[in-house]
Image (cartoon, rainbow, N blue to C red):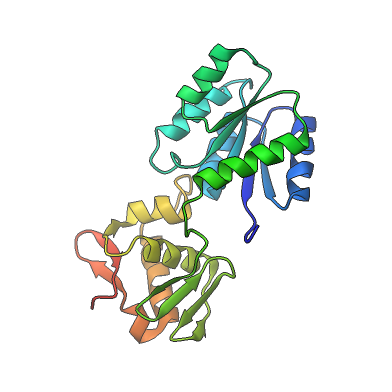
Amino acid sequence: MSVEKRVLIVDDEAPIREMIAVALEMAGYTTLEADNATTAHAMILDEQPDLVLLDWMMPGTSGIELAKRLRNDTITQDIPVIMLTAKADEDNKIQGLEQGVDDYITKPFSPRELVARLKAVLRRTTPQGQEDAITLGGLTLDPVSHRVFGDDESIELGPTEFRLLQFFMTHKERAYTRGQLLDMVWGGNVYVEERTVDVHIRRLRKALGEKFGAFVQTVRGTGYRFSTSI
């Protein structure tokens, strides 16, 4: 893989989480773990994993209920979900697929099968060009190497400023409110004030310098947009 994908494993049984984590890490993935749906939902909003492996039967909120919630939220609706379950009958499989689950693996399963199915789902759901470098108006952002260049000169950015710039460059010419930027860049479960966005916008502009900082434009009464048309 050209860049490590992050997979959230959601299962109330620690031995199963551990078995899956070992298999995925050996295959080159980074893993996150949650033992219930509530914790998982918070982690999904904060971490924005590339894929969620979700156990159907858990105490409290079930995996299928969490899958439905993810699909009904614009922030999480595109995150692929693979359901893990002991339920092997066709009706349950259909129910899972109707809730927008991308694949369905019945326990017990082999680590090799899991990795193969996970790779197949990621191939189907990763947008073409998501890992490609983006160049706009002489400013280049490379998501794989995590580097930014302005007219071929390296620009140093903090992690939040990098995510903010990446979001702007992949959503150019559209105005976003501070609340929308908090949801999209910081994660919907992070409780910070909207003026935090203004602080990071100032840092981003300063790091980009006068020429490229001008691409990050204030939209009065709304928020901010990224545009190379000055």
